[in-house]
Length: 66
Image (cartoon, rainbow, N blue to C red):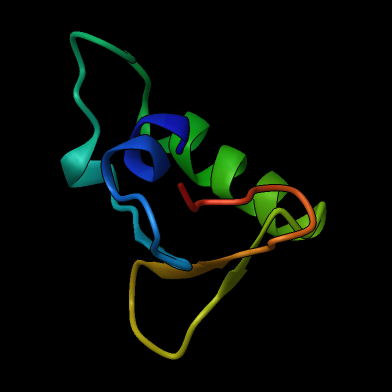
């Protein structure tokens, strides 16, 4: 998630899907990815939107500005 946020400054949404995980940089299984996203939602770092694989960033934890 850090890499995605870093590549998209000024956005309050992130697009995250297992298909977009760069397996050479961050190798992981689908189960690990799913568990990680669930933990981020449970800890309120991100919130799911009505669109698939789009999540809102909690500005209390991440400020994605300049």
